[in-house]
Length: 390
Image 1 (cartoon, rainbow, N blue to C red):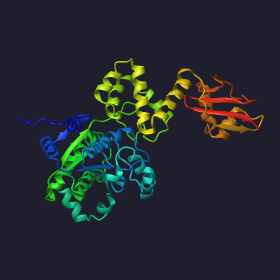
Image 2 (image 1 turned 60 degrees about the vertical axis):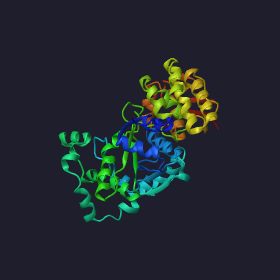
Image 3 (image 1 turned 120 degrees about the horizontal axis):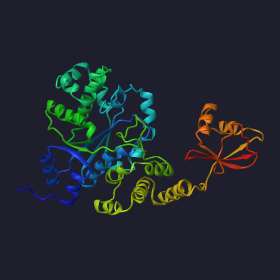
Image 4 (image 1 turned 90 degrees about the horizontal axis):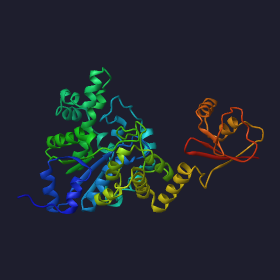
């Protein structure tokens, strides 16, 4: 008879989990009380970390809270190569300078989720940059072109006669070698990473290591309904300003509310189901409040909610609006260009003719309009500027 799992282990294995490879093995290890080396690799392909990536980071923290060693690998080498997982076009080859720029504020963002002081941190350039051609050839021998072309994204690109770089095909070998370098016993990732996670098991066996168990989390959709991805720009970043985060989440489709509650917040299932009994708009506001509170604190979450309600629901102005002093006689177009609120004449015209420019909550339709006194300009839903003559 199978042993009953503790509440903590059951939650660890089942909440937001899509796939576990060798579940019996992982359960046995967790019940044994052994301190496991749990790996998660993250490539700094952009400067910000979005809440989709935070799903796996929170799973890593859950392992930490049960006493296991979180082994975080920052892919400063693999980020240059580019992970092709779930990408339907060739990724760019990033420069070392771009990676360095992306890394500038990376760890403080990760530190909002996991306990970095208790984690083991590695940069994979330390070992991957030292591999020679013979070593890479040995690793490549473990895989076939047929296996690679069996991946959904490669298969579709091949059928459409789109480029597939050998560089992309080699990526799983590098991620797999990371597992060898740090002797991983468990590796975490999203479901889009499953091929790469399995490659780690293959390469560990080649190096006579016990293959890691795998836990893949569910994927979180972005603001456009596709998988959340920095490359696509459909992201909600954990470093977004509270008001920006609030606005992005409130704009989500209603059918994503439940999934976001489970994947992106820390509320219990009981608490989530209770909130979801409310109408969709109230449920969404509850979701938004929890997300902002998670990354910015309760005070900022309350301020963001108040800002949203006053600005977008009651159509009132925010309490704090930046001020720009302009020379009398200038047109609104010139003032907005000089202030940087619009970038060009063409952008001004596009916004004007789409009814997106308001002055004191009234739509402006005259391209030659000249403001003569202090007024508040609003562009779209989020841009405000108080302009005042010198």
